[in-house]
Image 1 (cartoon, rainbow, N blue to C red):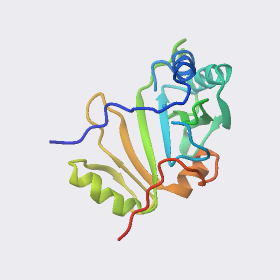
Image 2 (image 1 turned 30 degrees about the vertical axis):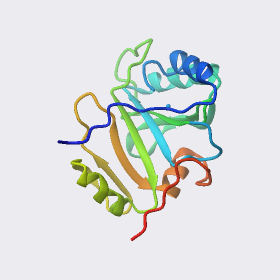
Image 3 (image 1 turned 60 degrees about the vertical axis):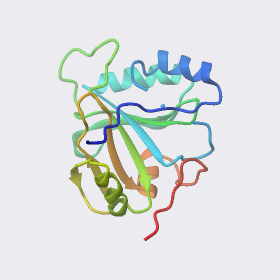
Image 4 (image 1 turned 90 degrees about the vertical axis):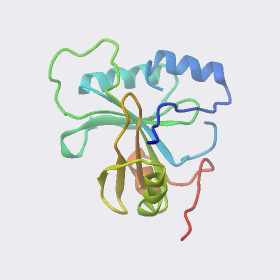
Amino acid sequence: MVLKVDVITLGAPEVRAARGFYATALSPAVAPATSGFRGCLLTCVVDQPTEVRTLMDAAVRSGAEVLKPAKKALFGAFSGVLRAPDGAIWKLAAATSRDTGRAAEAPLPTETTVILGVSAPKASKVFYAALGMTADRDYGSKYIDFHPAKAAARLCLMERGVLARDAGTTKEGDGFLRRVTH
């Protein structure tokens, strides 16, 4: 049996506010209340930059804080990062830096990813491989992602400090921190 990530459960201190935020800002995409960086980043990939901007604008109108404005990123991609009112950090991205056609008025994600900030990606990979997950891309101690099951979120591992910098924040925080020991 292969492990598949097809449900992400969120803990929010104000459930009604969180539900309203996701229904208006990131619907139908999906994102607990701690302080600082929780050690994970949720990504929502859409088709083109205009759709990233559309989602970012809706998120801000619904109370999100922009951590990194949407702009062209390394290797031709386009992305922006925001913190939802419940504290979850979202990266909204398109694989291309140019619009390729008419943008959807209500963008739908082409992929949803959970990136975990871990102290040792290579060591953490062993755990997920034991659960039946197969690495898609493995850059050793830098970045590892796993083949997603059909209609499931992609799971990735990245060193916690690097992931926090990518998210536009510091690695300090009191949510979900777990140290891997050898």
